[in-house]
Amino acid sequence: MIIADVVVGLQHGDEGKGKVVYNLLKTGEYDICLRYNGGPNAGHTIKDVNMEVVIHQVPCGVLFNKTSIIGSNCVVDLDKLEYELNYLEENGFPDVRTCLHISSNAHVIQNSHIQTDKTTNTIGTTQSGIGPCYADKAWRKGKRIRNYQEVLDAMKVQIIDPILFFYNISQEKDQYILCEGAQGYMLDIDHGDYPYCTSSSCVSGSICNSGLPSNTIRHVYGCCKIYDTYIGNKPFQPENCEELETIGKIGKEFGSTTGRKRQCNWMNMEEMKKAIFINGCTHIIVNKCDIFEIAHCYRIGEKEFSNLEELKVYFESQLETIKKGLMIQYSFSPVFI
Image: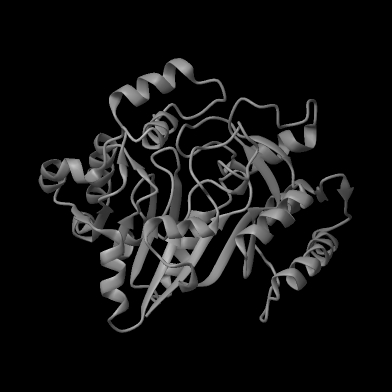
């Protein structure tokens, strides 16, 4: 039987999903780690004692020598993947190639996709060729990983039939899978702030696109920051707001993929409730609460608070209707970090 837990972003990405995934993997409960959307446009920064790595395409499971899968709904830049594998090997993870598996259905980013992205980019993407690659997928003229068997053999990375793989392991003893999402709800191609969004589905249900049945989902860990950030060309941060400028500086808000400065804004509680609802979250992790403490600033949307505890009480009160709508039968209390 397969038991799947999902880590998903509830804002514009950069919510600390990598940290949550890493800490869940540290429990030793999971057998497999699945990256279920996106490509090299996402970045997870992992920090631990005597270790700091930034990974983009490779699932975090390789850091624990777990079977780690790049799923069917991902797009892969093979040159960047080879660079990333070398980077991980040089940083103390010699078995990364043995651990990594890639769905035969994942699409491959071509140089033409990158050039198109650079010349037609109007919304401030990472110019990694993600959108054009997904466009070719929709046009049914893209190239899949299965067309690059010799390249993957040379890289010593295994290609799998995802549905057959998951079917086979489902016949064995219980298999626990941690599904690692990229970006977040507000960047989802269907539910996000279109057209200022990414090109893939970022919600928890999109794990099905990687070959997992929907009824395998046990827990959904929704990740957010106590404030919101965004990288791109749409106006997001209010002008002349010194508090948000201070928060951005204290929080070191720079993208892990591009290094660009992130725009900061207050959490949008109405969008947060929608994100929690559509993802079916069973757990909420609110990151970077310490930034508000350092800045002595406590605010959600237009609502200001005198201290962090007061803000927490308000946040939890806003979740009551969601708990009722989702019929959650166990603790829904958010964890504030």
